[in-house]
Image (cartoon, rainbow, N blue to C red; front, top):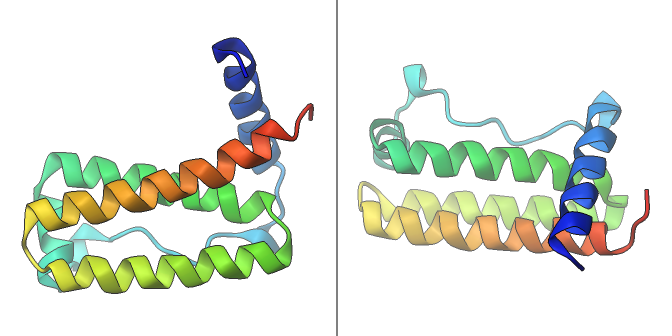
Amino acid sequence: MTRRHAGIGIAALGAALAFATPSFAIDYAPIDCAKAETPADRTVCSTYTLGQDEARMATLYGIATALVAMGQRGDIQDAQRAFIREREACGADTGCLSRVYANRIRQLDGVIATIASRGPF
């Protein structure tokens, strides 16, 4: 897939997400930094790059769960719960948190790339 086609596919995915029904809504709520209680949450909130990772991961998760079939959505949700456990196990270790976020973002990018490869939309 060329860069141009990949960009068109991602744009189409974004448009599809805009029209997704609330029943497909995200069951993952991004960290509310005003209410951050755990060491991992506080570290993500106080570290710019980790905050950006959180925002990107939450966006990708929302897109992925809105565009896949129910069975695959359940798998993605299970993986998200596992991600949260891994993130929390990192505590305030920024290196660990960066690795956990990078892995989850890579997984979600893969889901979206698979969907985009099936286009056109």
